[in-house]
Image (cartoon, rainbow, N blue to C red; front, top):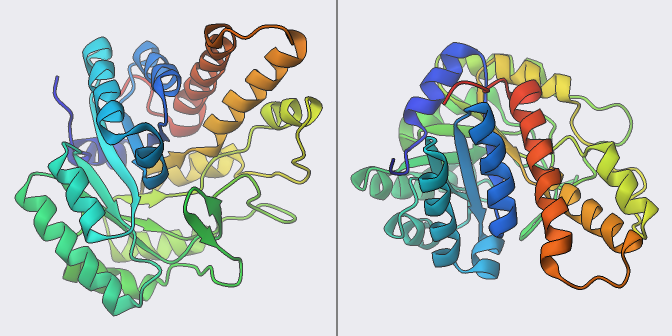
Length: 309
């Protein structure tokens, strides 16, 4: 089975009241953990690559890992660029075999965001590739994304129709209170479902995306802190809020920090218990297993897409 776009995935997800997991990948063990979980639960997948991941692992290696996952699982898998910040980056990924790209023009003015998004959409659609864009700005830090709380902003529902109409974009990432990284909330977690409802009314049937949607699973945070970490106050998005979003117009939920926490926490625990071991296979195997178990939980309980492949 070749790589697919998200078009059919999102149509089924919207109609079925579930979301597709978009998991960030950086190396072989992460790809294996995610795809083994999805294979066991027969779930569709979006494997996404950030600018930082491309610089770290080399785009060719990442693409070949995803191709290996396709051959191994037979699942519908979309290869997506996460937070492409320029037309050139998006073009490079389109030319390199990605089936979906995100152009993040949220740091531009509304008019300039439209202009750069439209340029990417025109090139992508000419090559059979779909495009995600962003309105509003999420706070937080992840890879090259650094947005202060002061510079973040909710998506304005009154802008979405004009933006989608003028750009021809295929899906839209919105800001309703999530943020990048492991420190998402101070105090009680809250998502602006009123904003999501207004956007859904203005864009009926249109797929919406949530970034910064890791739950920051306490088990892994506690593991990191127990074995030398310092993450007091780390707090993610409650899973019941994500499931509520998935029952609405949210068709794609991005998960990155939970993958990092699962891998790092498990490796720290392994070395604390086995300080003399030095074989990467010994400590990466349980890390891969932790990612697999976490992704299975997300697919089954949070996303609701088990059995939807």
